[in-house]
Image (tube, rainbow, N blue to C red; front, side, top):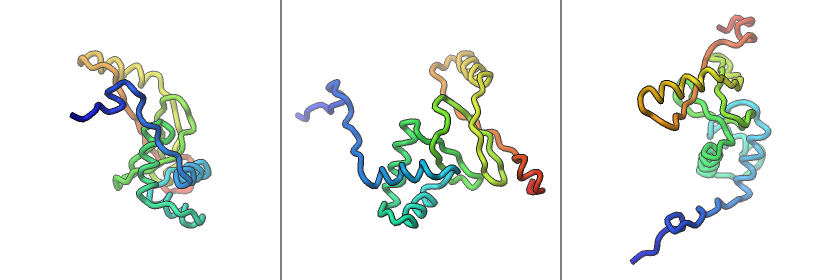
Length: 145
């Protein structure tokens, strides 16, 4: 007979081990202001002389996403891109379709709407993401719309 897992026995989940590689990924995320794909982040780390596998980059990004430390968006081609959250609270994004500049915004009316619609349909604990795309003022002024 097997013993129950630590979670089933009421013990806290095992702590995720901190490594030099994960620290390098975190440091790169702090330096890079724009959204980047895992592959772009991996290339940035390699250029900086860091020895971090692509698999470690993916795992670290997934963990930071689950912890709420990074934001993620999907580019038009479907690729996921990530960046360190600039806003600690729940927020949404206004994204330029041309240059991918992103602005983090809070929107209380969206929160109220999501809660109301969920309740009207018998759902509780709604979660949502909102991405509004457009063309930023710089791209519009440069005629890149």
